Image 1: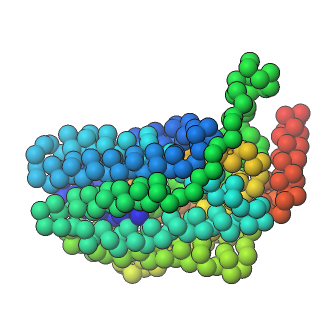
Image 2 (image 1 turned 45 degrees about the vertical axis):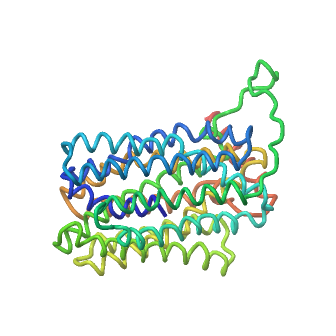
Image 3 (image 1 turned 30 degrees about the vertical axis):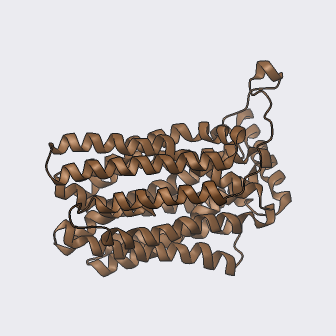
Length: 409
C-alpha cells in the first residue's frame, strides 16, 4: 500500500520540486540494489532467528524510511534546498527501505510456505500476492486523500509511515511464531558438507528467476512510466493529474486482485498455466497502452496488463516454492525477493525512452513478454511447474539432466 501510494504521487512530487523525470524514477534504484543484495542475508537470518522478528525488521525499515522521505519532500516543496540536494537526500532516505525493508518479504513467503501443503501452495501464494494487490488498490486511492494542507504532497508519506507503525504493533502483538529450529554450522569446513550452491545457480530455480526478473522489469517499467504518460495525455498540472493517476492505478490493482483472489481460485490454475497466461495477457495490455490515443485507453490497457501480471507473479513464486524442499523455502524466497528488487534499477531507462518516444517502454514490454511466453512453453522447469508433490522431483531431475546434457555437449 505504501510503496504503490508513493509511486502514484512521485511524478507529481518530482515535477513540483523540479527533479527531472528520469531522476525521479532513479530514486528507487539505490534502494532496489540494496534490496537485491540484502534479501539473501535476511532470508538466512529468518532461518536463524525466526520469521516474525524479520517481518518486524522490515516494517521498521519501511517506517523509518518513509518518515525521512516525507521530511525530505516537505523541504523540497518549500524550496529549502536545490532540487539536486533534495534528490540526493530522497535517494538516501529511500535506500534505508531497500536495506532493511527487504527483511520482511522472504520471511513472509517462507512463513506461509511452511504452513501450507504443496497441493495448496499455489492458492497460498496467490493469496499473498492478493494481499499485495489489495494494498495496491488502497494505496493510490488513499494517497490523494492524504495530501493535507500544510504538508501537501508529503502528506501521503507521513500517513503511510503512521499506518506502518500500527501494523508493526499488530505483528508484534498478534502474529503467532514458533521457535526457529537450531541451524547446523553453514560452513563446509565445520560440517564437512559441500558448500551450498547460490539459488540463482540452482537448475531448479534459475528458470523461475529469469522469468521473474523479466516480468518484474516489465511491470516496474510500466508503473514508473504511467504517471508521466497520464500527466502528458491530460495536459494538466502534476497536482491536478494526481487523481487521474490514482484512478488508473486503482483499476490496474483491482484487475490484479481479480486474478489473484478470484480467477486463480475459481479455475484452480496451476503455476504452469499462470506462467503462460500471465505474460500473454500482460503483453496484450501493454500493446493497448502503446497504441492508445487518450486517457481511457491507457486505463484499459493498464488494467489488462495488471491482470496478466496478477497471474504471472504467483505463477513463478509458487512454481519456485514447489521446486525446492521445505528447508530451502527461505533461501528460495530470498532469491525471488532479490529478483523483484534489482529490476528497479532499469526503470530510469524506461522513463528516458518515454521522454524520447512515448510508446517505446510499452512496446519493449510487448517484445519481452512475448519472448517469455515462448520461454514458458520451452523451458523444462516451467513446463513441469505443477502443485502435485511428485512434480518437485520431476522438475529437479529434468533440469539437472538438461544441464548435464548441455555440459556434455
